[in-house]
Image 1 (cartoon, rainbow, N blue to C red):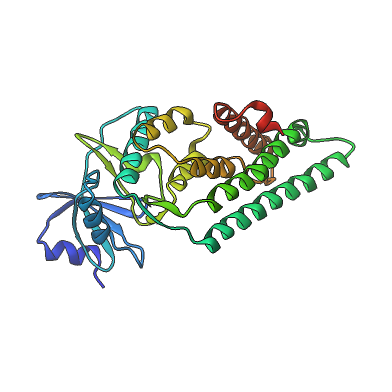
Image 2: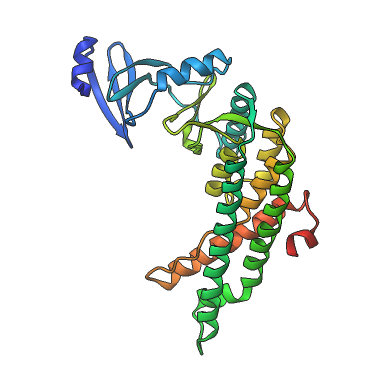
Length: 300
């Protein structure tokens, strides 16, 4: 098995500087700068890049070489871009990725049923979890600030979950009437730092890529950045190139509307921050859904 020094010696490179960032090592040499990134055991980046290039998707870093332990890329110097612009650019790139790798396959009834049942379980579990929390809070004589915050807004939590419960039934009826489903190549690890901007746009970190419903890239990004970016604008940028189908959008909104669990920490300040973050996420999601549903639909 090769290590970085073996690879450097193989190419007769003379390193001047090493910089470690997460699971990547940047090496400055007289012949250029290179990024050595540790591979996952089943990673096949070279095959993936060949496929994406065959589909005319070119927003990829240059893969110089790879072996059983590392993918080796040319280093790309990043231009400083506002995060809001970077988020829009990322949505644009993902829309192109999905557009250029789309194909249709027969619907697997067992797969659809599994998605439906797993989502129902997730909704019911979260509903019961918050029911237990509010029951415990209301049994106390004095509430802590975080408990009071939850108690004041628990109806919003339950409204969001009931909306998801109703709409997953709607989604199930929609897909049962379909013969085909749309599949794309998902990046499956969207992070604002995985986009490098220079003369072109370069999308990094492809280790988790897979083939599936396009909504999962959007959902992943929303879960990470819902409170930082205006997702209505991001979704508009995405759909300018690649419009979601009705059943795709319904499932995405269902999954977006399931809030995270409130996990209590050691300090009350930490608990207040966590509760506020969950509630802000619920309010932000309701605003996002308003153009697609009436307020009454969401609150039913």
